[in-house]
Length: 166
Image: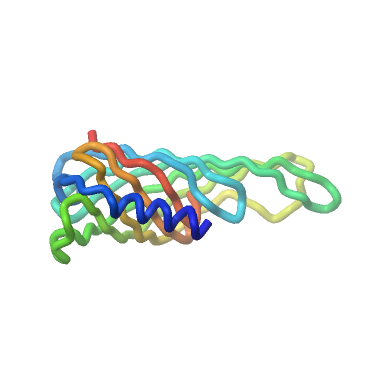
């Protein structure tokens, strides 16, 4: 995993594209990709909206399926996460080059955990509150690579995906 992240990071640094900082006020951005977690591999889809030059609000849906061995049986589990987030983008305050976007923020959402009726384990649906820190590298004015680390929500502990400015 470390080799993969190193290769991706090195590839990103080698590109030299120019674009605007963060997400412009009143503009939207689509985000999608895969995550890493203790319970399977989540797939996520999200939308961010720029409310000013440094702040975005967003929503995200994630889904993951996995098999859990419990009490001499294997049970198929599914987790659906619905999350709202807010991020502060550090590009302007830190004078970061325009083709990068570094951000941090908070999120709140709801996990919908589905298990077979015969499963007697302890998983349950509920509220999730978390935080995230991440960055993007834009290849051009529309397309970027996104890497995010988070905790406390249903999406994942880390995510890798694409961002498309609409």
